[in-house]
Length: 583
Image (tube, rainbow, N blue to C red; front, side):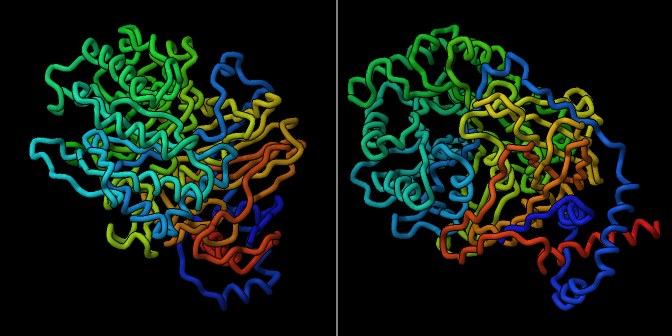
């Protein structure tokens, strides 16, 4: 059921209430629902919290975006998910008849919020070292592990059933397209890669968005895959690989269906383009990046949560290939961040916290403002700390009891940001947050490209305190907004998006709650801390509805001003107000 709340004390209380966890006491809820005193107490609580909030921040949202921003129009499938191949059967199923209902829901939650096919990348180090076996009847079988291989490299054998699984999930959860990784580790023996490419083209058809040729080739030498490998050796091999794919009738001459180089660490995209990659008809230039690494275990740097709570760190994280991105624009080739997450090599103890929900949103939006055309959040085998989701165990993926990672909530948020006709996203530099390490906010203006009008705002509050945002007069007659929030940045499970949480079957649980405010003469939006809000301006549209599809009852359509569920959520506001009065 949807809850549609208008602008009064209840509007703020509804969302700030989700910052505290408490047990269900339905008899108290029932009593309060009948008590006029409850509404009076809510209003008083609102006033108390308002006096304790920090100074209001004025939002500047220009009528038109900067002229240069039109060079990067974001399509309505900006957010995607990147998977390692090795765990695919435990996540997407062993056959098309046994595909986990939880994964169907996880995927459909995202598919339902965009107008274009949702994009999935399957790749990683494991796929780069895996072998396609046309005669294999199972989806995946584990191969012998090379003792000298990187610990992040889990090779498998996989066969045609792998593509059946991709098609099966798309049939069940909704329209999808796929990026399929092709290895560059042994270009002198490209036969197996060509067989994989031929099968992918045949089995996926129009669902094949692109081949990504090579995964992190800049680390081939460091991982012992290739001796003394460098850009001068790499670029000619790309030409040989493309010729081999043409000879196998997998791609046509000058067809734009290949992407790369998927570098992460040691090479510069600009150097690769200047070395000759720019003469090949690439569909995408792909980059992969993590701000921290835990390849040698946890340390002070990769367990420091404060780095991820400062918007001023995001631009430096993303502009590591600035010159190459400018060059890509000149060549009219989109740049995609084909893999990102919090800490490379499996994450650390901070990777599953709510801080990473906010950080992943911030990175996605900032990337859109910095000329990236798409971003893909990465997930791996069971038990990895930064995963978007995990089954109860690898052997029980068809059962309920899945764990939803904090970064999945970021994916949900980002899937609702863009417009079907395209979007232009601009960092509005709230409170000088682009450069000030002390700023605890971030803000983005989102323009509907079809008529270049202001459509939405995305606001982030990293602090553990309420933040007031002042929207100016003349911006809109009304605004609607939804809030992603948790009790604090260390929270891992008690996270809600518009009043809903993700259940053990990948299903959205609870009533979806949207707030509407009159803003004709300006208005103030109070955002709990920590939280992120997506705000629709006048004609801007926010997703509303039930996106659960598998093994769960559907909610009734309609709206309500207040329900027992909503009342239950409001109790902590009263407690918070009492604490503040006594402090």
